[in-house]
Image (cartoon, rainbow over all chains, first blue to last red):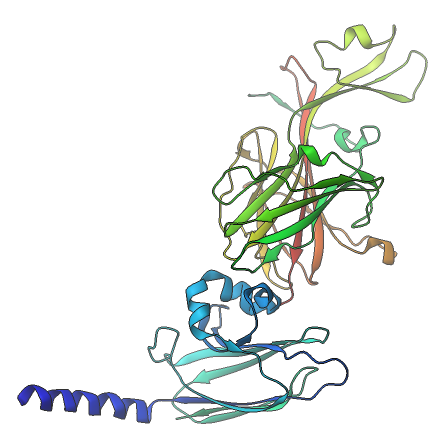
Length: 163
Length: 271
């Protein structure tokens, strides 16, 4: 009985930390494109200011053969750990508006420390263009919102840090 | 080998001046690949002074491919055309493959005929055996021992760092991994001569597409006292790096000058 109470207390504590943890929200818009359309490959990740990846948030992809085309993400992150890539993968998506929410954790599940980071969004479309979005931000306990200007492969998107 | 180092003569380096010396390069279809089932790459081999348009074929049978585990890889099918040689290579293991040609020392003797001022060249004539091949009264006789290495690196999935030196002649040694060069990011390479870091190696780095611009826009660098060059390429693209070093020696039986050239092909990826 005592053990069970303790377990409940621990679970409650764990869930309450989750409840109050920093959240990263990305409203990503992939615009409809003219001509022959292949779904784009998309990687969204967070780098520290030295260019080292802290967390891969999104990887929409096809077979391994095409991972290299997500150039920066592949060089900095993907090629270093095949098992990790398999763990985060999901299929490509068509043009549309995607609301993506994440806890502000690193790849190992530990909270991202306060400090400076860069959100990177790489979008590559076969027979289309490549876009590399870079949004510097600082985790400092304050809520923030950034508007990511449209590129050849993304429409205006919103990145929000919710504390 | 140990040589007494003499002052290098002024003017063009002998190795480059040597008659009919073309630039040589190996240009793979891909420098960086991802696949869980192995991958094919196709490689062009050519002697050409135009980066990167092919000119003359070069024996693909002499291409040495070293896999990530240090073992040699067998070539797939190859073809020798009039403008280039082509080789198919199947990469199975993850890691970095070195493709290399050359590296062996060759001897060239330059001289002038009696009463003439035009430089003449003898191939495969070293300081010890040149006498019988030189005409009577030949003057300004000079023999150079030089090696040329033609190199590139291809990486399947995770890069590996299996870079070994033979400690003979001029050698390229990566500091920045050749598959980790990107536009706008600082990179460093190193050069060894007979196994030691060599200063004063002349290096030129040229981006592809020379046919379609008026200036070659070569980046010209010289190695520092650690044998290193530091550079940042502003543009993504495929590049040729040409390195050259020579020094005059007084106490060597086979040559008056020793040196080497390295031709390295690599890509700078988009940031």
